[in-house]
Amino acid sequence: MSTEPRFTYQRLTHADLPMLAEWLARPHVAEWWGAPPTLDELRQDLEVDIAADVSWQYIALLDGRPVGFIQAYDVMRADPDWWREETDPGARGIDQFLAHAEQLGQGLGTRLVGQFVAKLFEDPAVTKVQTDPSPDNARAIRAYEKAGFRPVARVVTPDGPALLMVVRRDAWRGP
View 1 (cartoon, rainbow, N blue to C red):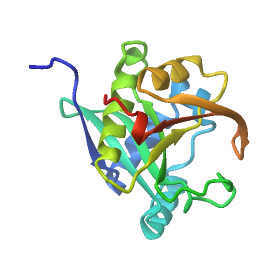
View 2: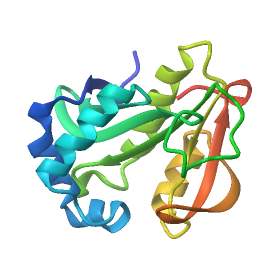
View 3: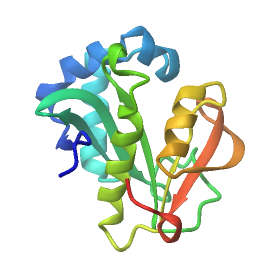
């Protein structure tokens, strides 16, 4: 029997937004996610995301305790200012963070990402998963590499410089 921590993913709801707002204001999150949005901005963003059905947000739970945020999105259908070159309808993107600074550096980020990618690959239409950490975020890059992602290119996104990293279904080895 595996002793590896198992994450579950609960769809983000309006009731989760105050907690998410507090997490986004934490220094270890804001360092990479930028200035935290207001609660009203989070509400508006969630409504847009629900209506568009292009991205899906989750609270990551570990042993039933909320420990992070993770989202997936359909790369081709996402905001037109992002990933204009993408032609693969099976491409999904992810973004995430661990909410508690004391949990950093323990391998939980790698497990969170790996288990979520496995969940995405349960859909046979998904061909690859990508993410785009800051090139300065060495911790995140290491976690993604351990989860099976490979660097593809340095890119400039609406959020600034990023390292595009991809894991393809045919190269996926599991979490």
